Image 1 (cartoon, one colour):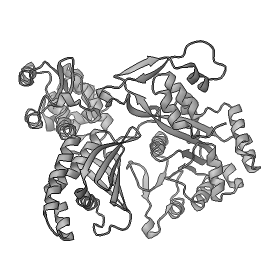
Image 2 (cartoon, rainbow, N blue to C red):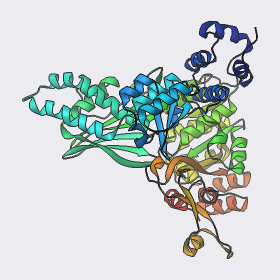
Image 3 (tube, rainbow, N blue to C red):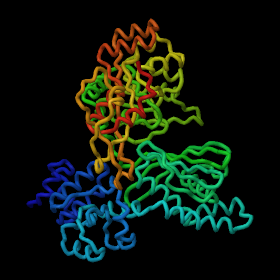
Image 4 (cartoon, helix red, strand yellow):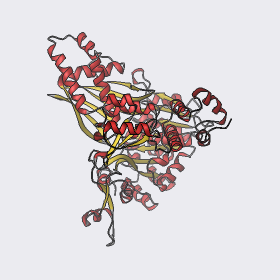
Length: 565
């Protein structure tokens, strides 16, 4: 039986096999839309879903909008109330030039578009999105900070009006629909703002809820002080922690369930003088894919150097940088690059942030003595070729990792240092002998995340002579053009949207090994690396600023503490 051009495109794109087409049609019917929708719900990877959306959008002559990666404009959402959006099965995205852009399952139907236009009172431009995407987007995008604060105040009145509320009653209140909706709303708002972390911080008079967006903490919600304990109890309940223990730090994990999609979070609680504080790390969608190394912002030169290091058969590769600088993302991408069925790869992590088929992933558990060192010893008896260690925190783990490298294993791990060279001194300071560091270490990657300039409001300008003198030696009189964001609704008037990595890669050569063994000062090692062509993070950042990816101010912000010559 002849298949439509859309179905043939699915096979050509590799989303389905030719042998699976008949079963797919039997399940979903002959309609291209039903086939696309059924396949969308069965695909696990976000990138595959985006490809499917683009293929179906092309088939109907409409662009697909990936709603999971879109921040809807407030003035667009005001044009259609949530209940009506659910009833019509569509979600507003933008309102520009008097035209409302709306995502819907059937944008090719002129009658549906015309009816919506009459309802909202403005012209409508229709884009395609799958029903599941729309359903989840309605729940996420219509969450506003003011609604959360109003709900908090309303619930606080119930707490304050109940005289002598007992701990048992407080626990029951934390299970009430209002508190459940408040906590769920905070998590949804975290997803909406694409925040990497959510801080629930009690103060003397209120509870500040701060979101880390593009690396910057912003206080976007302020809850009533009376809601501190109920919110904390609710978080502990869904993370399966001890709700009666308020004196000790606790760590857990929780998920935000949406329609056939879930977002994973990591919870950390600590007691403070004003009550317990929670920090929630947004790990992301459980169907999140590992980005290829080519998409992490590595320059061609750095990508070539890193690819050479991860293809070695033995040695330790350190990825360095502060917390939340993208080290784990780089390591996962590196593992995906070298992962093959004929290679045994084992990871030891705390915690396992992303589950990957084909890898043996082990989570440490300090409460039973299963630390990095103990787990790593066990792993080396599992015949691995490549081992990922989440972090080198002590001399014992560093020693085992180095010994493993000398016995034919490639070890990838992270280390907290300001730049790549300091990996050497950090290991020695831990107690590792230079005679062990030198032969085992093959290189170090240092990285930071800088904010990207918003594509909607990017403008060019020419920096002052003083700024240029601080960046370039022997600069000619030729004007230098760079870029910045003016600020707009799309970027919340910050001028930035998203982040990208800047990197430096220090490759350990035989000459540098001799210098390490002879305890040559780090400054001399730096000079040797520079002589061999080493390029710093700051250099990489300035190049990205000249290319219009980030700003000179961002490069200064993240690299001035790197301590270079």
